Length: 252
Image (cartoon, rainbow, N blue to C red; front, top):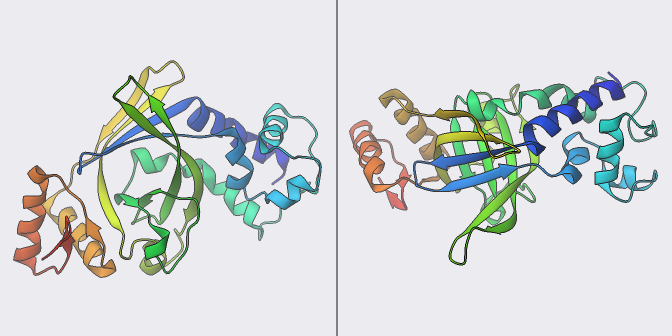
């Protein structure tokens, strides 16, 4: 693996996170606008800030531009041969799976992450999209408020980090869940840079899937947030199956 592979991921990032934005809604009635920023790409590839800054790049946007356009980049930043044991290798090889969390999520949870409640710290993350079954996570941070009109503002979230625990235990896959408020993804819409709808998906949950979700909530002492229409189905299952979980702040 070398800089060619990193450039391929730069193209992937441009197409899937810069030229595409996502609207994700939950079964709690909340929606998130999700997109990428150029300056986040080096971090997502495991390129440390002190490394690129000490090798001529004060601005990560410029580094991303050089990688994307095939301009020379110091091998102190990206080695000529990226070691299979390095953090960068794992980041580069697995980042192409990141958009699966929108379209092929086996445990579609949205964690409203509060690091003050977590024993495992995750910095600069406000929303964590999680695939519990796969152990893949995308972290997003609040970026700016977008005015629609005088009364309405939409909050934009930008991708800030990602974690792949696909080889880990369920404890490692759930390590950011304890004590958090959790929502279930309902709809995902992908729009291109002309705001044209390209793809959409609705997530529905069977009784067995609802039961498994409640067990995850119980196991982690988390709080499942649901709208009034949907909470009754989960409450019925929790009471019938004696699953001691919290739903909308009430312990069952």
